[in-house]
Image (tube, rainbow, N blue to C red; front, side, top):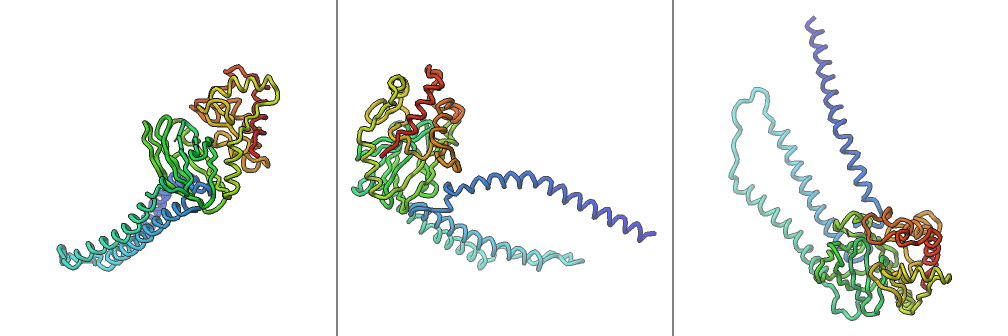
Length: 365
Ligand code: CUA
């Protein structure tokens, strides 16, 4: 009889324990799901600091690896000692006396002061070295390509001061060369960041200029982001860095400089384009570059920085389609941007489509 009662209380205990475990799991599930989702967002290949494509990003990753290695080693040692102590010095059944107290042990205190000091020095030396190396902004380097970056809500302007060339959204650079950046903003704080190439740098208002430099040894297209909350479309404030061969870069500068301001063929459309679009945008030497400069927009990687151009439709949509999406309703693509809706300017759907087609074919040679 007593055995039976014992058995039933035991199974009750087990049941309660299982219930508790299940409740804990249930509570953890949503958190695990949320972390899973957040971490999945880190998986975008071209936006990862874990795949460095240039010396500046490589040095950051090196520092990360060094500090994580040290942390893991410390963690393993401390946890092993803790586990050993917990098991080895457990209170035995019937043990009542207070164990021998060891506070103020001189040897131990020296040990756990000196070891962290050594670790801090091991971390500090390469960090200080990397910080000073990153501080070389190449501002006075004759061989560096000078680019003035201006952040706008929600797009990027790039001016090649030595060449008199201004563009937007696609930063074309020659591979292997140091690019000397001079950064500022036209409105609020932004932060210029190309994860696979470099660290972040703020763009400050009121004439404050920040400088930094990076280089891209390989050809390729790297995705850049704004890394400072700057308004409703902060998360959409993307740009591209296109690293090309030296010859291709020279060719690009030459075609940007030659006045390729071909207006739409249709005279009516050309008039509309001139009277409306060129009030804020520039093509070649015409128009005002208050908004993004549109010279050679047909050769760019994306429209509005985020609608990726891809004729195959695999990694985006054909450029003409993207231009239509943008021009028919800019606010739905990038909420809070300053571009007026062309329809509010009196443009018909046919005119908007015509301008999309014209811009899509406005390529650089
Ligand atoms: Cu600009 Cu965030």
